[in-house]
Image (cartoon, rainbow, N blue to C red; front, top):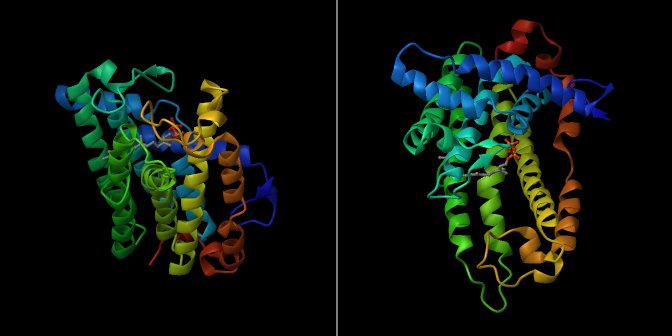
Length: 312
Ligand code: GRG
């Protein structure tokens, strides 16, 4: 049990997640309608295939929670929450392509290019990036000031380009062919990959929620560092789960021959140290708990629905 945003009552975290996931899925479904034009229809079908395929909506929930924690209303951040999921879907489609990881399955289903072909998969990934921007701008401009909308979009695009996913992926691809020098651990390279590939979009999700919810600069920066820590922890835990599933020998291979596969925390520092690392990032102070006190007393948190939905 944690403490709910904008509330002093304890609440069930899993109930909160499931409840948000429901409204996010409805909003995602509405954001990408089918279309009568056969060419557009083809792309929209491929978009819906990836977007509505039961991933964990971690990034959208983080976006909505960040908006609420600074005193905003869920509906204000919903378009941005959908947009970050569109970016995530775009990155997964690209990551699965034959020229990248060459995966045939994602979330237990054939990957986008296996169903729709490589050409359509690439166009689908492009269309997601464009829609993420237009959807955020069109759907939030009524309630949020233009300067906040453009700040939010800027954060999202920063997380996509060479300050984010693209840089992380480039480093990751290079990491697969990397042989470490005698005394090199690979940890610096690994952190670069995960800060860009995983943490950047989680960070953008939280920061966008904070901006659109009307948060102060200080609140937004606290959300940024919180989400960055969550991003790194998320990746370490994911790596440990992957490695312990695939091999019980990994503790022994730490820091050794990395040419055979991707750089992961267990491969670089071993399983036990990776677990310690993840536990340490859990100790990072939770800005949500501190922010709540100030936002509860603010007019945004206690005001009318008009005040909650209109952010100067
Ligand atoms: C231009 C958008 C864009 C991308 C180009 C291909 C690429 C650069 C980046 C790939 C980035 C990537 C695949 C990151 C993986 C991040 C990650 C931890 C994915 C798993 O996230 P979960 O567990 O997955 O939230 P689900 O399936 O639950 O959504």
